Image (cartoon, helix red, strand yellow):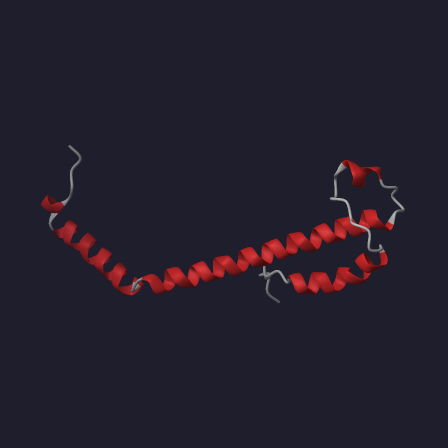
Length: 108
């Protein structure tokens, strides 16, 4: 068994889980969790828990879209250059400077 855990977030899975509970809270607008309106709700008020669950699904949506954006950026960076060639050029330059110390830059 591996100790590595996936960090992938599935908003839709969270949405499917919380949707029935949100529906049971009614169609009234939910207060933002932590707001004075939310704090004033009685603990037994279904809207109090529903607001927290709704906030949770919005947070999962943000995480999922950030993951998608990072993956797209990673693919763009990967395609931006021939990274094997870049590494080879850096190695060659470093090797040249080791064998030709006079070629090293000196800060004046």
